[in-house]
Amino acid sequence: RQTLADLLRRAKADVIVSHGKRAGMLAAAARPAQAAHIHVLHRYRFKGLHRYDRVWCVSDHLRQAALGVGAPAPALVTVENFLARPAAAPAPRAPLKPPRIGFLGRLTPEKGADLLIEALALLMGQEMPLHAVIAGAGPQEAALKALAVERGLGELVSFVGWVDQPETFFDTIDLLVA
Image (cartoon, rainbow, N blue to C red; front, side):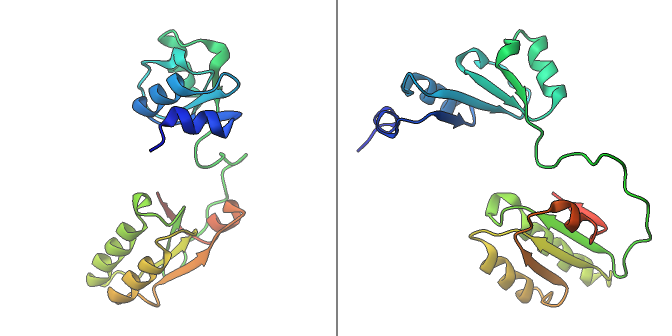
C-alpha cells in the first residue's frame, strides 16, 4: 500500500493541483520540494491559502475577495472558469423552432446531463416542443443515450460529441444548461 507522500516522491511532479481542504493539506505536507502546489479556489473558503505556491481563482471577484482577507497577492492568479466572456453581446435572434436546449461538458455523473434528459421528459409530458443538444464526451455517454431512448426522447436529444469551439456550438442553441 502506497501513501500519497510515496507516490508524489516517485512521480517527481513539477506541479500538483489539489481541490478541497483535505487534498490540499495532504499534498502540501507530502509534496516534493521541487513541485509547485496549486489550489483551485472556486468558493469563498479562504483558510489555508498560505500553504499554496499559487492559488487559481475562477474569477477576478473571487481573487479580490481573497486579497481582502489577507491572501498573498503574488500567489493569486485569475483563471476564468468554464467559458470566456464574448467580446460583444451576440445580436438578438428569434428562438429556434422547436427551441434548442444545449449542454456542454464532460459526460460524467457529477455534470448532470442525465438531469437535463429527465427534465426534458417531464416537459414533453406537458407537450412542450423542445430539442436538446448534448455536446461532450465521457464514460456516461452510452448510459445517457440509453436514458434518452428509455424516456422516449430518442429523436429529441442529439449527441454531437466533443466540441472544440464552444462559440460555434452556442450559435446553434437557445439556452445553455450547466
